[in-house]
Length: 127
Image: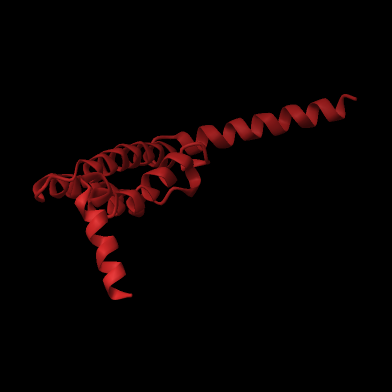
């Protein structure tokens, strides 16, 4: 059994494409892509749910590891791309967080919801 596994591993490693697909240089970034995918999916949600601390931490994390993705030998461009996308999406989420909590976005949202409720109430009362 061990000989069969060793032969299969040698066959996989002999082809540069399957060797790459079976390496941590591929699967590390692929598994890491869950973070920017989640951030992009959350862009359509209410900014009230955004954690400012987590967004800041993920922004610094991706900014730092973009550098290390290029510093390893050979350079891991897939990991760099993952961190670049994550950095960008976290910056957008950070802007949404700051706009909502610090720059009047929350007040505008609440005022808009109050106006909608008032209009709905007036339409019900007038019937």
